[in-house]
Length: 95
Image (cartoon, rainbow, N blue to C red; front, side, top):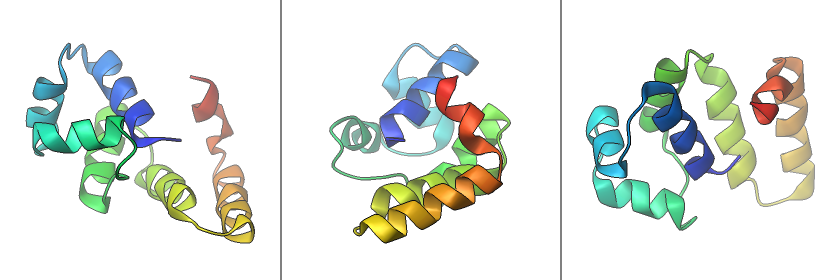
């Protein structure tokens, strides 16, 4: 899942209306959120952990999800997808 989708879920869950507020609460720069929105970058581990905490999601789920997004090859993406399935994370994709 794209980082921007996770950010939007945090904003919705927490009731934060702006990306500026979201960046402040997650301890990153607003430019970082903008980069997520333009798909220029994926969440690093620090932000992924903070997003997981904010959403009440097991951190490994978001870490694995972002690793799947980073994967260059289809076999690697498939392997990460299998990890997410084993973690029972498929329900997160329909929230």
